[in-house]
Length: 203
Ligand SMILES: C[S@@+](CC[C@H](N)C(=O)[O-])C[C@H]1O[C@@H](n2cnc3c(N)ncnc32)[C@H](O)[C@@H]1O
Image 1: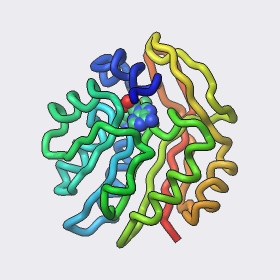
Image 2: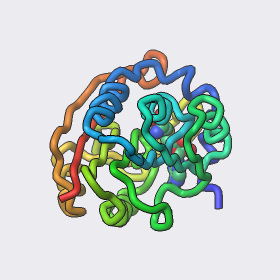
Image 3: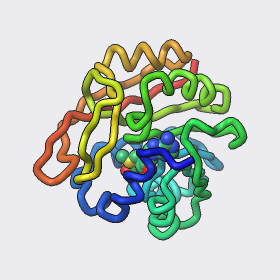
């Protein structure tokens, strides 16, 4: 079943990369992850979108990437822009059959779910992490659930947590937050938002 969110990203398509102006903080997270991982390493990119910047950054560093996304249009972009990854069209909550990973990243994808979806997803993910067992997340700062927004002119819904609540959601799923930082970034032309970048390790 195609969710409203993936229909939204099917519409957004190529405009996503053209409009997402500032990716420096996300690239810094990717660079940190690359330093933490030995080789070979296998990373799950949840809601990988167009493959930019993260799937490509990890692949270029010799890391195996499995990217999941519901949007066929975003996955076509990922195949073209970050070749060499394994891209699967599926709901990001469906991971149990994907095997084990040294790390997982979810940059601006968990926010597309409802808050009630996130704890079971984190618990499942924790079961599938091995080795350094790292999880990197990017969210927007806020305190809402199923909040209607217009992203690049396309209506969708998002959730957000205040920083301490996000830490607690992770600790309830047995992840220790090792770093959380807030970054003001231009998410769409002329729209600055505060984003949260979080690094966690499965306990
Ligand atoms: C804001 S984009 C982020 C993409 C990418 N991670 C990045 O850093 O640019 C959110 C992505 O999540 C995908 N998505 C939203 N809800 C989803 C769901 N329930 N299952 C799978 N993918 C979903 C969308 O199709 C979109 O590609």
